[in-house]
Image (tube, rainbow, N blue to C red):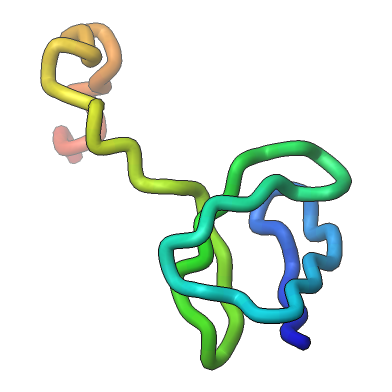
Length: 68
């Protein structure tokens, strides 16, 4: 049995046999999580490989951050 915490709400997540790549839902907040490591047991938000540059607008970036 393995135990970790949800990166979104810090709820305790327990799995009998975690497997890398397994997608699970947080029992408290319901967010989808991917098992990214089994030793130590760790989960994170799944990588969205359907994302592309067209999903961003120029307004999403703040160009002022590098002007110091």
